Image (cartoon, rainbow, N blue to C red):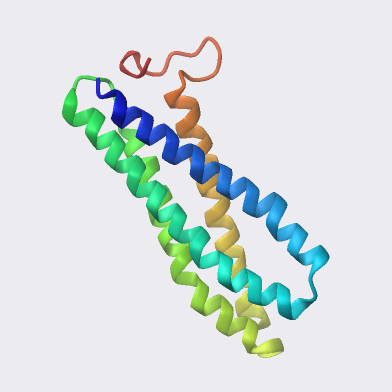
Length: 156
């Protein structure tokens, strides 16, 4: 088995999951509690594109790592759902990145854009939550799964 590919996949998934947790549960709440609306908006507009680009990079690295494992030994037992999860995580991060201009325009429109802002922001939050769940699933699978659960002999 290609150990480097497996480590790359695990590392990329761990970085992305960690970034999601840090951004969602530490940075964003702190910004809204400590900053006035204008500086908070300026800060968040600077950080969110970087956040989603990190997700695209991590998803791409996960796909590359899984491909390396598969190419080194196609009988290694890499479940196809891992490829699907990594692809979905990459696509969700790219979609989140693509939503940013619309979210910003809706926010800038004030009350006229409030409904559109809520819809786009909700979609962004849902994509981030999807990435969190998928990322945790990938990490659990690649570390042997929950206790007493065998996922794939080739991944252990």
